[in-house]
Every structure is written in structure tokens, then in C-alpha cells.
Image 1 (cartoon, one colour):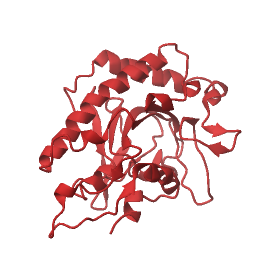
Image 2 (cartoon, rainbow, N blue to C red):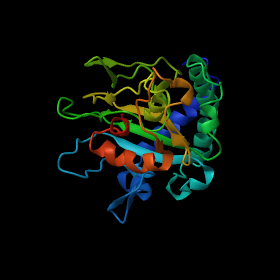
Image 3 (spheres, rainbow, N blue to C red):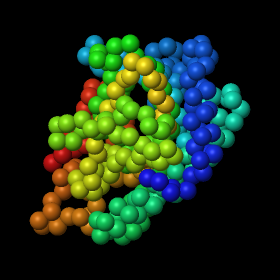
Length: 276
């Protein structure tokens, strides 16, 4: 997506504070760890790799995950306060992505011949938004390890900002991996699992991965958008009739999110468990 309305200065500031955080000493970054007492995992915080089982695929990456919405769910003690502008930049950048999110959700609803606000009505002030800042260092053996293993995004819609002309992201189509490249100051929009379910499979949530690079490091910023926790995730009734049956069972949003990370660690997707 180009001409999206986010100023280049805001995008530069967002990428700069992300880059500055990941270049801090390890002991400084560990102050924001996603591990509680060195063991129990939480979604928010910094981590470089978490091995939960012997069969889990390693990811050659560092990540800082911070919940943006709802506001009362922010764990601000996990938000870096150096540089001092980090919080202001992240809040400004993420707030500007909301307009993009809603514009795309309305376009999808129109394409499906639903009420234009069918999807946006599921994104109130209680809707979930998670920012994930990613850093993929150069890897001496890119043939042995991925930057991020194959997966589908959780939630409804992901808005990804990549460094310009950075290679590494790939999407799977018809059994073949294709490179995804972004032009400077463009955004990549990714359909996530909940949107596939709500569109009854018309819009697909693509499997994607990140490769490592032996020479070049890579940075990214993604905003994951999810529906309200109390929302029922199910195929839109307007898409169903006697000839078009539901392809997915319905699930409450908070039950979905309670399961998505466990499934991800095992290389599985929630949408597959909900198929009729």
C-alpha cells in the first residue's frame, strides 16, 4: 500500500527507535524480557528465542512485542524509555495505522457485498492491537536456520513496515515460496486467520516465513489487529445460504487468542482446527 497517509517522518522515526532498541547491550534489553521469573512466557516484552519443546523450530530473530490496544492492557513497564521518544513514536505510528485498517476492512466488506461497516463494527475501543518490532541479525549459516518459521498471522489484519528493498520475507503459494519486496515507505497488508474465518475462506491467510541472510541484517515493524475479545469469530451470515455453507466453526475471540500462541509454537494454525 502506498499513498497511505502516514508521513515519511513518522515512519523514519518508528524504524529508528526500533533499530536503536535492538542495538542496545543484551543486559539492557533483558530489562524488558517476556519471561516472568526466567520461566513463564508472556506475550508482551523482549525475547530472542524461546524453546518450549525439543521439536520446535528455532527462529534466528529478536522481537519486542507490546500491546497497544486496549489502552488499559498496556504493560508500560515493558516499553523502553530510552530514547525518551520511543513511547510517543510508537503510539503515534500505531494510531495512524487504524485509518488504514478501517479503509481496508470496508473495502473487503464491499467486495463481499456485506454492509460496509460489518468488519469495522468488530473493532471498538476494546479491540486488540499488538506491535511487534523485529530484528533479524546476519546469520553465518542461513542454510540451517530460518529468521522466522512458516506461519499464518493470528488476528484479523496485519500491517507490516519493512526496511526498503530488504529481502527475506517469503509467501507460500501453490507449494512454492515467493519473495516479497516492499518499495520505500510502503506498507504490506496481510490477511490474518480471523479474517479468513469471517470471510468464510474467500480471503485467505497466507503462510509466510522469513529467511536469514549471511551478510545483511533486517528490521521490521508490524501492527497485528484483532477483533474485540468478546466478539464471536464466525463466517459472516451474509455470505451463507443453502449453497454456500459455513467452512469454519465459530469461536469466541478470547478463546481463540488463548490458543493461538500454543498452536503457533507447534507449527499449527487455529483456523485448521475450526474447519467444518
